[in-house]
Length: 491
Picture 1 (cartoon, rainbow, N blue to C red):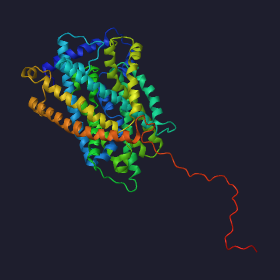
Picture 2 (cartoon, rainbow, N blue to C red):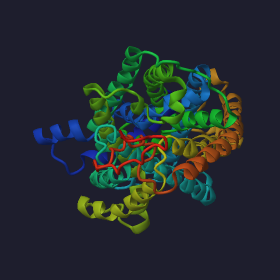
Picture 3 (cartoon, helix red, strand yellow):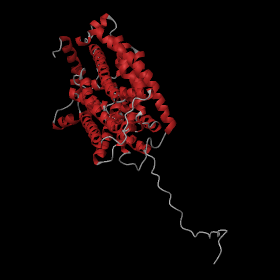
Picture 4 (tube, rainbow, N blue to C red):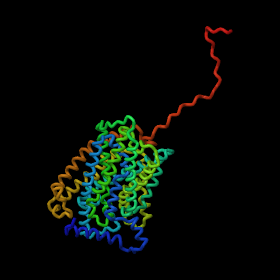
């Protein structure tokens, strides 16, 4: 599709600073080329891999659990619906980023050694109150997003090695995930996002094929949906699944041509659906209502070398996704303490370490793999990546002058500005009532039930009960002579 002259100017302005930033003061040699190939990405392909890899991490293992709560038809329908909704709001965020970036470039603002973030976009377009709200929701969501990845690591490794409880594995993986402080920015996730998506693809198709080969368990039942609480809990887990675009601005800032991001998230979502729909449906078909008490799909599949491989690959991918969720928090912390423009990687890494400590602590307090996804989805994702972007887009372009001078005009097939505002209003109303309202009610009830059942700081959430062995008989001792019956006479 040909760009208009206005679009070409915008793209040239945006890309100009990136080219300067990436090449200034650097000599191009073989070593640099190899390093750039594996380590330094900024193409549309890199952005696509980042979006797809970040969107379908550990949640892949909880979607069968959501199917058992929703039923097959609703499980498929909600994935398609929220996938489309998430792609729309990711598009809105990209439009707002380009608008903000273009205005700042016209003011000759230099963004070298500075990563633009969502709260700064809100600040530049709408003011400090929007900035504060966006910062609070975004940071809290990414904090708990990192917590969920850490919980998932402990939950998965337990199915390979149960000699240690899940809490101990959380300690270990917390230390491992802390090494992400050494990854400077989203530019440097090129090889990791590529490998992460390959790993998730393998795991998704393993779940699908292994469930079909296993067949249905004896007496399998597919009774969902049975309760409103479970129904809306499952729906908000899917809302969470397709709400992985809280890092959209950081991913765009890492691109050489961020103008081309507009449809990337949609195509990433299309690929993700080819993984989540077959795996979720197949596991639910095989195990049915058993999944209501097994939020991790690995727990019901028999242990085989392929299952162990899938677990290991998911562990590596969760480490990568932890970095994706935590890196924006590192940036916020660096800016707060004045270290964001520091050129020393080691100093920045040391400054970032305090961010990992509360994540580690929260993962130990709330190890509820599965239910915590729904809670985060309803209370945080609903606002962070659905409601706030839709409202921000409408308020940014509420005046006729703003709409006329907008860098990006809405596409014709959605009805231009009238159609865009209509869709935005629908997103706000739907997500607020269904996602935050009913979803928040249901997920909080379920979350409180987990606390009542297992308690905070539980050592091993949803671990199988120890096998009950028969009590051995006491050592043999000579029995005391029994008294003779009353009618017995000696010979």
